[in-house]
Image 1 (cartoon, rainbow, N blue to C red):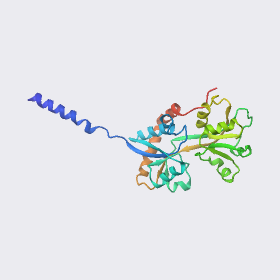
Image 2: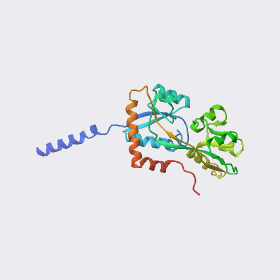
Image 3: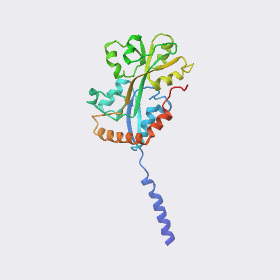
Image 4: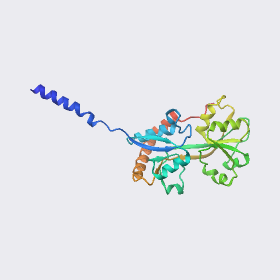
Length: 256
């Protein structure tokens, strides 16, 4: 009898296991645009923004589900509360009326790429005004240092869907420079037939752009999500884990 009771107890304990299994991760729907290599539906692991966000949300027992949309549609989905969050958006007073912005989970550096044969080197962002037509990504936001110049028409930028197109135009002499993120630029350059040897990056850092996750004010749970997200970012940054992920996944300029 004692053996029978022990056997039944074992069965009960064993059968209780699955009912206490960890629940599946909660899904956060995040709207974004195609900005390869930082975020792209077709890139390995969907780009390094996606890798960083997956790790941050895993800290919260959640996982992201990315929606890749045109820029205007992404913004509309964000402010209407159609998604849990959207990125990458620059924090402005106007947008803060509609969105809650997280602490930065990444810092992007905007640089100037030139033809290797071009001896000119800009010293200040406003120096680009005198260089004629430049090229940048269609979905990219103009850095703060150049916003007024772009709005007035003094800074002329050709916008194209792919940064590779900018580099082809630079090679052909159709534009004088390419304005883009350091990592985006080097990734595209290294995919060129000459692996970017015909290009160089000017020493000038036009701007450092913090990358935020923006939460809709319309959604009641956004404030709680924001606090949890910020806490996870601070924890992973303090432990060095976000830095390690960046080293492993973020494209780097070629070595000497």
